[in-house]
Image (cartoon, rainbow, N blue to C red; front, side, top):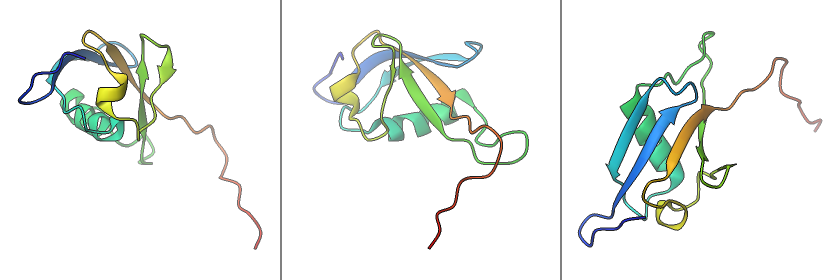
Amino acid sequence: MRVNDESGIAVIEVSDVSGQKTIEVERVRPEATMGELVDRLLAELELSREDSNGRALTYRARLEREGRHLNAAERVGDVLQSGDRLVLQPNIHAGGTPLRTRA
Protein backbone atom coordinates (compact mmCIF):
# COMPACT_ATOMS: atom_id res chain seq x y z
CA MET A 1 0.00 0.00 0.00
CA ARG A 2 1.27 3.46 -0.80
CA VAL A 3 0.67 5.44 2.38
CA ASN A 4 0.77 9.22 2.68
CA ASP A 5 1.57 10.51 6.19
CA GLU A 6 -1.53 12.72 6.26
CA SER A 7 -4.35 10.58 4.93
CA GLY A 8 -3.20 7.02 4.18
CA ILE A 9 -3.47 6.96 0.39
CA ALA A 10 -3.55 3.77 -1.63
CA VAL A 11 -4.28 3.41 -5.30
CA ILE A 12 -6.43 0.36 -6.00
CA GLU A 13 -8.70 -0.64 -8.86
CA VAL A 14 -12.15 -1.96 -8.03
CA SER A 15 -14.75 -3.55 -10.29
CA ASP A 16 -18.02 -5.39 -10.05
CA VAL A 17 -18.02 -9.10 -10.86
CA SER A 18 -18.99 -8.47 -14.50
CA GLY A 19 -16.10 -6.04 -15.01
CA GLN A 20 -18.48 -3.49 -16.56
CA LYS A 21 -18.19 -1.03 -13.68
CA THR A 22 -14.65 -0.09 -12.68
CA ILE A 23 -13.25 2.69 -10.51
CA GLU A 24 -9.85 3.69 -9.19
CA VAL A 25 -9.72 4.50 -5.49
CA GLU A 26 -6.98 6.72 -4.14
CA ARG A 27 -7.99 7.57 -0.60
CA VAL A 28 -8.36 4.62 1.75
CA ARG A 29 -7.75 4.83 5.48
CA PRO A 30 -5.36 2.01 6.46
CA GLU A 31 -7.20 1.52 9.77
CA ALA A 32 -10.56 0.96 8.02
CA THR A 33 -11.94 -2.56 7.85
CA MET A 34 -12.62 -4.27 4.56
CA GLY A 35 -16.31 -4.28 5.49
CA GLU A 36 -16.26 -0.47 5.75
CA LEU A 37 -14.41 -0.21 2.45
CA VAL A 38 -16.83 -2.56 0.68
CA ASP A 39 -19.78 -0.46 1.90
CA ARG A 40 -18.11 2.67 0.49
CA LEU A 41 -17.32 0.95 -2.81
CA LEU A 42 -20.88 -0.34 -3.26
CA ALA A 43 -22.10 3.25 -3.19
CA GLU A 44 -19.36 4.50 -5.54
CA LEU A 45 -20.04 1.70 -8.06
CA GLU A 46 -23.81 2.14 -7.61
CA LEU A 47 -24.31 -1.59 -7.07
CA SER A 48 -27.69 -2.86 -5.98
CA ARG A 49 -28.09 -3.89 -2.37
CA GLU A 50 -31.11 -6.05 -3.22
CA ASP A 51 -31.64 -8.95 -5.62
CA SER A 52 -34.46 -9.05 -8.18
CA ASN A 53 -36.84 -10.40 -5.49
CA GLY A 54 -36.09 -7.58 -3.06
CA ARG A 55 -33.92 -9.67 -0.74
CA ALA A 56 -30.87 -7.99 0.79
CA LEU A 57 -27.56 -8.72 -0.92
CA THR A 58 -24.25 -8.85 0.87
CA TYR A 59 -20.97 -8.42 -0.96
CA ARG A 60 -17.41 -9.52 -0.40
CA ALA A 61 -14.15 -8.37 -1.95
CA ARG A 62 -11.87 -10.73 -3.86
CA LEU A 63 -8.22 -9.69 -3.87
CA GLU A 64 -6.92 -10.68 -7.30
CA ARG A 65 -3.24 -10.64 -6.24
CA GLU A 66 -3.81 -13.41 -3.70
CA GLY A 67 -6.82 -15.06 -5.34
CA ARG A 68 -8.87 -14.98 -2.14
CA HIS A 69 -11.88 -13.30 -0.61
CA LEU A 70 -11.04 -10.83 2.12
CA ASN A 71 -12.71 -11.04 5.50
CA ALA A 72 -14.82 -8.01 6.41
CA ALA A 73 -12.89 -7.62 9.69
CA GLU A 74 -9.44 -7.46 8.04
CA ARG A 75 -7.74 -4.04 8.14
CA VAL A 76 -7.11 -2.33 4.80
CA GLY A 77 -3.52 -1.49 5.76
CA ASP A 78 -2.80 -5.15 6.52
CA VAL A 79 -4.05 -6.63 3.24
CA LEU A 80 -3.93 -4.07 0.41
CA GLN A 81 -0.99 -2.81 -1.60
CA SER A 82 -0.76 -0.06 -4.18
CA GLY A 83 -1.91 -1.38 -7.54
CA ASP A 84 -4.13 -4.11 -6.10
CA ARG A 85 -7.33 -5.04 -7.87
CA LEU A 86 -10.50 -5.90 -5.97
CA VAL A 87 -13.60 -7.50 -7.43
CA LEU A 88 -16.85 -7.06 -5.52
CA GLN A 89 -18.97 -10.19 -5.62
CA PRO A 90 -22.43 -10.69 -4.16
CA ASN A 91 -22.83 -13.65 -1.83
CA ILE A 92 -25.17 -16.08 -3.54
CA HIS A 93 -27.53 -18.14 -1.43
CA ALA A 94 -28.94 -20.91 -3.61
CA GLY A 95 -32.70 -21.56 -3.20
CA GLY A 96 -34.46 -23.14 -0.28
CA THR A 97 -34.92 -21.84 3.19
CA PRO A 98 -32.22 -21.69 5.84
CA LEU A 99 -31.95 -24.64 8.18
CA ARG A 100 -33.40 -24.08 11.59
CA THR A 101 -32.10 -25.72 14.72
CA ARG A 102 -34.46 -27.33 17.16
CA ALA A 103 -34.71 -25.93 20.64
